[in-house]
Amino acid sequence: MKQRLLLLFTWLVFADHGGAGFAAETPKPNVLLIILDDQNGFAGRTDLAPEPVTPSLDRFAKRGVIFANAQCPAPICNPSRTAFLSGLRPSTTGIYDNEQHSLPAGHILRRTTSLPGYFREQGYYTASSGKVFGAAFRAVVKTGVWDETMYTGGKSFKADPVPPKEKLPLSGLAGRHDWGAFPASREDLEDWRLAGWAAEFLTKPQPKPFFLACGIVKPHTPWYVPKEYFDLFPPDRITIPELTADESAGVPAVAREKAHKNDAQLVARRKELVAAYLAVSRYADDCVARILAGLEKGPYRDNTIVVIFGDNGYQFGEKNIWNKGRLWEGSAHVPLVMAGPGIVKDQTSTRPVSLLDLYPTLLELAALPPRPDLDGVSLVPLLKNPAAPWERPALTTSGFNNHAVRTERWRYIRYADGSEELYDHDADPLEHTNVASKPEFAGIKADLEKWLPQKNEPRNPDSKSRKSKD
Image (tube, rainbow, N blue to C red):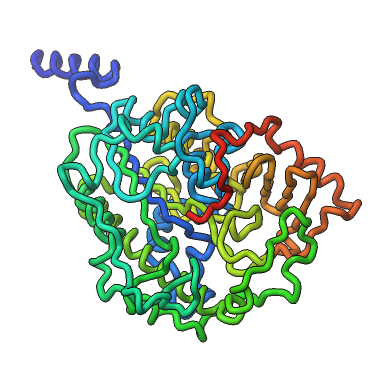
């Protein structure tokens, strides 16, 4: 009896001190980032065609929170990825386009730590497959960030097969918008292979908590995927709002797109373009499904924070834009879903959030030391209560001193020359009517102006080219 009492007393003493020697510490959560290239707000839509665009993402979203008003920090690849992986705005780094590759000595990005790099410093095992970093930041972090990549151990990158020259362009349209049923099998595509590598990684025991980033290149152009995906989205079954008679109405001169020789063809074949984009988006969604199947099969399902999102949006003729790179909803709005420990399930938040907020959010979810030098804020309050009060709008930047401020109701755009646009999404969700010049909205503009960056770093490094097609 005395021996039993002694054992009980000893257990109580240790339990009172955190259970030292008896219970292991709560393991750190793993992190899985899945980045889709050029995936716009069509993700999650079921009204565009008889088939849903992203059924796998839709099913997974029930495990967490959908951010229905997520905005990218920049509407093209390099500045957007540089921003959300550094936690710094384009106006802080001076990285505004895709042609900024090498960084000069002393550049702020040479003095900061990337998101995966910070997790690695905190004891995480870091791994990646596919396209993760943009060119500017990748030039700095190409060593010392990843413990393992898809190509570790002599494996080589395999570019997607290109249709024979005699069959190009498959779409019949020359230029960037080429699409068609090719190749015969998705197993021939690199995204499918990288998704398989990530899935296998998730099934294997890992010695430490891990940070795994997977960059799926689709639905970036060209839109080549097997015929099975095009069969799901026949152009005559696509339902999208018609373009207006004058898509430039109300757009300041500085933001008006010059006419191109293919514009008339693009308008005439717009549903074909959208159908091709949806087909490739569905293929990318199947790649996401393959990764998530690995997570389900492996030992980490319940202890992994999963973030799935697009790096920037894409437009189909709105404001006469047939790609991305602008400050309107089509280019700036992206899908964002988060799920895992500490996150409520099957919820949607309409609060405006930025991909810039991912860095501080993941640090808080993983209980890692915060970084006071980041420009974003943690979304954890919204991951616990998606309807929590949220006064902060989302900011998108396109080039030097051109910004859009997005709230739940308003999009306010101000360009470097002082030109303005203001759209009321309650009354005008397609952004057809610019009300910035109306006196009754002066107070709204004044409130939104307060969120514009006070300092805009010059374009650094500079380059002769200003083209941004990647």
